[in-house]
Amino acid sequence: MANTFSIAMCTYNGARHLSEQLDSISTQSRLPDELVICDDASTDDTRAILTDFAASAPFPVHLHFNERNLGSTKNFECAIRQCTGDMIALCDQDDVWLPEKLSALETKFASVPSVGLIFSDAEVIDESARSAGYTLWEKLSIRNAELRSLRSQRAVDALLQGSTVTGATMAFRGRFKELVLPIPNDLPVIHDAWIALLVAAVSQVFPFATPLIRYRQHSAQQVGAKERVEAEAGVIEAMQRKTSYTEMIQVGAEARQRLADYSGVYESVDAISGLDARLQHLRARASLPEGRLGRVRLVAAELLSRRYHLYSNGFRSAVKDLLF
Image (cartoon, rainbow, N blue to C red; front, side, top):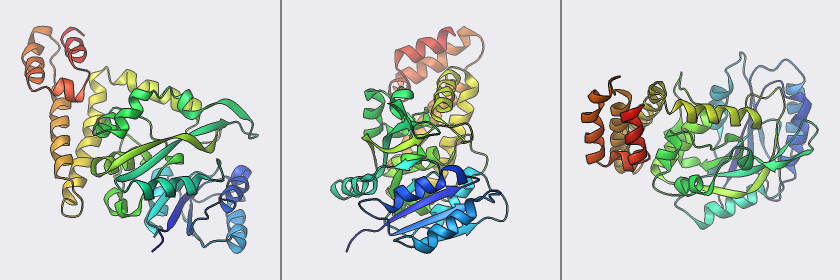
């Protein structure tokens, strides 16, 4: 039986670039089996564009118009919830998909059954669809070491520490839908980070190095490439401060609880055990006293347990915690 592919798309006042994105979906070499679109109470021509497209699209289009604005994360939750496919690709309103995107994703999912989530690089374009001359991964300085971590059993660690899995390029297996939904309120991360973290805990993540979309950077979008760089740099800088651990602990604890809730559905025992150890390490680092002498016992305990090596940067992190 052939696998089915759903697209979960969110829109909000996206009339300017929406038709170009819809056209790129309708000209995929492998058409989707359904396109689910949730519009977040747009006030421009977005709804009219969607209605016209749905009437003539070469595949089923399911439209949902929110009566009030939910925000990006909850709107994506709405769209994902309505998808029925074996695979679900997330879609932003103002990008352009390259023709082989769905075909490439389907081939990878079919060839590696253990892969639960794929994300790709993207060609960055400006408001007029002119190439910026670099890819998203280049702009975000995503290095091979980080990609190797995401492909390995350390993917959860990398994701907790702020590795970038861009939702606009993401697809995951539909069987994980009940694991990732609902997305908790008040998380310090958006939907893409939450989905990637949970799916990585119970399956493999595959970074697809070939750009599969053209990622539009412009002033009206929620998170552009330039802004993503600044945000990512802020996360890395914040990780050097104790306040950042609060956010990582919050996300990790929420993920741990969700995995426990579904331990009878997914093979999550090892993931829960791993998250417990990670959270213990984060809480230890977050609780270091101000005085250097007072830190010695906690740092020594984390070194002896090898948690510095497993979940941080080894002796480098330990020395940093002792001195700064």
